[in-house]
Length: 101
Image (tube, rainbow, N blue to C red; front, top):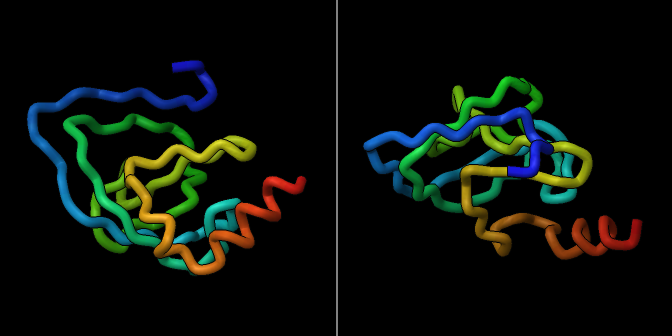
């Protein structure tokens, strides 16, 4: 929408819906590497994203592409998963530390 991510969204006819579980493969303001988070997906599209620098690996769910989710540029994180913040270990401290920077 604003050109921050080199990403294209393609509408498709089939609904993707369900619970997700992601594992962080890189540190971010949301979770440290190795931390698992839960959420859900609800979309009728898929993303075409050229960057292989994903932040999360899908344990359950589809994500952006090829079993990965979470495109990040600086401190902006875009996910197909709608995250359930209380599922993230240490989220309050991580967000507080990020906001203090």
